[in-house]
Image (cartoon, helix red, strand yellow):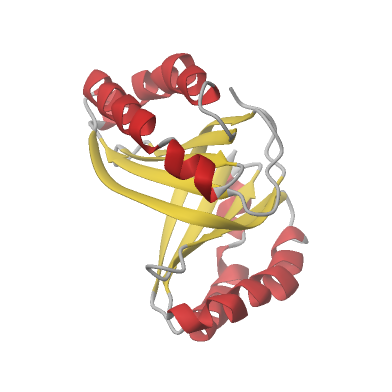
Length: 206
């Protein structure tokens, strides 16, 4: 499974309009494309950072959709009043413990490591990170996406509410430090978001 993430550094006042555009127009257009298996969107109203992620069953499907998606992404950037950046990932792990509902929030952690260590990082995420996340109150789901060529990765953990996400910060920090040291990774960014749209239909990959 593969994913493409489009990040917009939006004007805060444009976020609701941007979410509506992605929900009402982008989602139906993208999900009608061959081998697309869903779309999600996370937003931070405090920072203006918004990330829309589409998932694809094969790398060929992701690649072949690029030309069609480009003008849609450009229109989204115009609505958000933002420059955009694009990342392409392999979905290495996805686990759902519970269904996320209204008010759910997501903590994303970006990491960088030696590309040769990616497989070890994936296995460690499955064997150590997921069980620890499952112990946190309000945990819903988690994923790990990787770029094998560059050694970059991003982990996402979804919680039932902002309160649950905030309450998990201390335990998450301890877990993050321990796992990063174990796999030889550097944490390059951490950001918290509201889950604006959740329509990814990626199967369990834990």
